[in-house]
Image 1 (cartoon, rainbow, N blue to C red):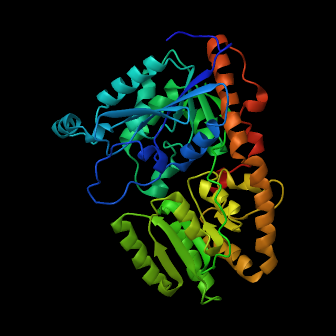
Image 2: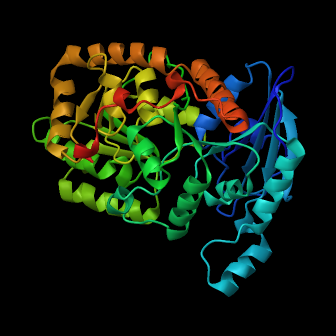
Image 3: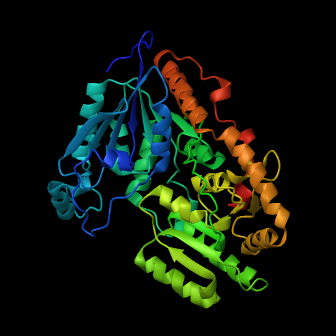
Length: 437
């Protein structure tokens, strides 16, 4: 796969990622799940970016992604001008399961995955491969085999974060070591967070980091929706690192002066963790102030449920600017969160969200009390936040910035053209965060 000029032809791009939505599932022949539950949407940022890329001229987009439940080993099709290549995850191969059991491994070798992706990329001969996330081995491992094409890594998160084990209580050594290999192998990255940028530089001091934000789902406002809760906590996966335990403790503090305060928890978690949370709810005496809603298969249904609350309580711990915060802002919900490496960015033009110091549950509760007791505060915050995100987190402009980054990476890779300063990640735009982690 040699280097090539982009003159007089379309930019040819491969996305190496993992996602699902209704549109692609309608084109896939899927086996029923063992738990008889429906297949669900996930990684909505991929679908959002995809919708914008379909509007862009002069590019040819190919997507390579695993999808659980495929009846065949792979399925390829073209839809709205985008070329899809789905494959069955290697963990579901009988031969891989036998190899794992015999070798006492928790992860397969990904021999079939790497070979299959390598063959697809050779056939496509792209100008650039955009890897979305190094932390997911069932597709990211294939980037180790790409050498004569630039690989641009869109950093969804950084798994090799020393804080991860302390906050989440578990780190997968295989994923950790694989991400280190990938960070040392890949040169080009897109980041929207100072913390992620610093962690990548620590793993690879030669890394070239460009500024990048992910597009979000811009939800539709439901007319005349009845508000039945004060606060909502929502996430695809309800977990300690998303801040649910701190949210419950803050709710208990607020209840002391507002006995009827309510919190709606939206999202899924394991049965064991759900039972643990129920025990904490009883210990904190907030059972009557809380209701749990599970995971909604359709992202739009989840956002409809979110709109039934007045405020969003999202004390995330390991993220930068989580998509849930941007979604809540689009829904005109005032937001309470923690100071992460990214959330102060939203207040750089004036207070748009309420930010408590990391792990300071008392201050988190105080922010909640301010929203309950200062009627004009919420509406002022919501208006300022909406103005900010509509200007700085416009999905079409984000898609255009992806293409600008691709072109800069290709120019640097093929001819050594320096990346323009305005495309590079500038840590001075993002407030320091380390004192609050």
